[in-house]
Image 1: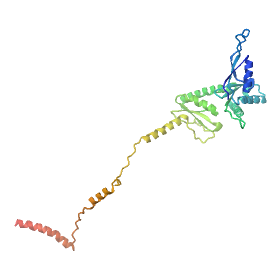
Image 2: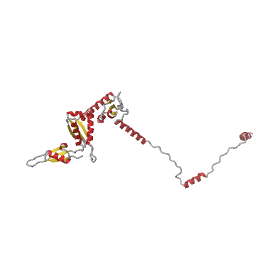
Image 3: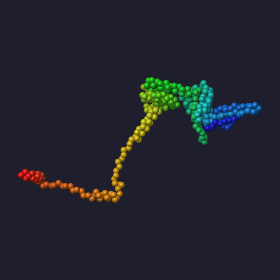
Image 4: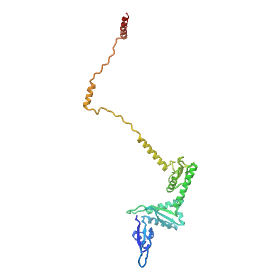
Length: 319
């Protein structure tokens, strides 16, 4: 990839020849802008050369243009091929001609295939070649911009229908590029969201009311899939937010303090010896043993004897 370069010459034509020679590109394939026209002056006084700005040339751009032109010749299609610089190394090849409509196909299927082949040709490298990747967008009579306007209008119309009927709507199968247009347009409509169902070439966009939740239209089935839907962007965002909230709540829970035990490890040997000598030397009081009797009569007499003694004492006092 080369940066924009200024070239001068006695005329614009000579400046272009200078640029083509130094850049190694055919003159008719240069993308340039005339900054100043040549001035002849009077008797050589006040004359000035022509000045042009040649836009940076992208490796693969010339190859892509030649590939499309060759394809058109082989198909006997009379059309003009125009290369339009886009951002950075991107380029758009626009094909103009009444007969070029055959290259579009159903909803741009043929055009997408042509674009894929063109990018393969533009980015083919030799073994020892190192250059930047260039993305080539191929269009026919500005079909893509017209199709995008149609899809955005469709998205707004179907979103309005969903809001009024409170029922979801499933659109026809679309390419990833066209589905992104629908998602993008509906995303700016309050209360309505989108989701994609199906697989491969039968993947469709479903527009539904957020307050009602995602659901397929009555009687509709997910084509060529097991019925498991993928989350929409908004649903993914909400689920992630719930996870973060749960994690934060768990982090804020107070930790229960673990009990601390003093098992004597902090005592020195001398302190432990003093403790043993202080509490271990005390004599424990002996437990009074119950009196044993030979038989029940002896046990009964012992009880009566006690009562008798106390009774005798009371009798003697009375006497």
